Length: 526
Image (cartoon, rainbow, N blue to C red; front, side, top):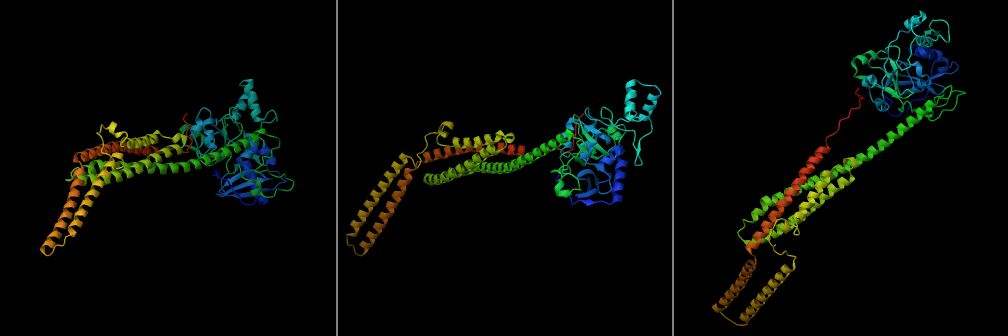
């Protein structure tokens, strides 16, 4: 209810009749406060009301919080600062050490936190019967002293219950071990103590009676509580209460405890609250940074996986469909030209896909938080680089036991061969031009002229056919087949390694997406 910071309305003074009604309600709900009621609600001071969100009303006097009420109709619940001033005047239960951090985070208090070894639940005690037995002479001297102290016989001689403001002070309380002397019912206000701590840590309403808690040993006990460090504890005095009553001391940045005598335990509680708030703020900041980093890492994982999948698909298509189709072409020169164009285009795209995939996986590993740096990111990146290296001309001849490859267009041997062919074509073109000039110098008339033209055209066509035949003769079909088969083996190796990396990345991303379900309820095994 009070997990977030609260901003209340300005204070309102209450009528005298309402103040008397609240005073009587406090005495009725918490009769052990009867001896201290004038200290809590001085008659010369005026009780004021501050309206809070969710229909909660906070009652303060002289700048000090006293009680608050939910829905303007429920029981009056004490503020923790009032509980710290009079800790033995309120029905209480105790939680074990394991439940402290959950209660201080606003989680639901569960029954195992009270029924475990460190927890404390009420143990009904008939103190009147004990007093009667002690008066009759039964029991040890120690028991008599305990009964006398519980009934107040050291201060007064009469055995009657003390009565003040028309309300009887019941013969109840907590023993030395912290057990309350009667069972608490469902809907009754209760103070939550903590194992090993002197100050109370929470106040709330029971949703299950203490007798039922003992019988069942499980289930929720308190759902909405006012705890140390929540919004009601941190509520600012200046922003909410405004000016103070005449003669009152100026408040600090939060509700001052203003005890009648110094209590170092309250200072310790305030320091603990500030420390918890600082821890919560630091954890929230780290969670925001981790969320931003997780989004970037998720995008990198997605890009790397998609790129690797496309790389695997291209390699598989080349090795299973495209390259075998080239081997069925009838002409070696046609197959050579098609293979050269295909090899250049495929190499360019495959290099780009491999670079994008490997760099995305490597960056995802580097940017991931230390607990989430999974090794599969490095393995996938290494497999992508390995597939690219295994298909290169440096490793493939040794890895795949390939024969000497056909000289690439950029090698010195290929450059020399192409220059020789160009010179031969130029020589043949010059010879054809000389013959054409020589034939044109003769003046041939009639049919002879027509014959010479036909002869010239036939000579040119013959030269072109001769050039194409020479070009086709330069292409060796066996070399083309060997080169195509070597390229096919490279693509098979590349596709296998890339496919293994793609499968590894898919499994890794699926493993990252399995959330760990953590409930907010406080469940402590006994």
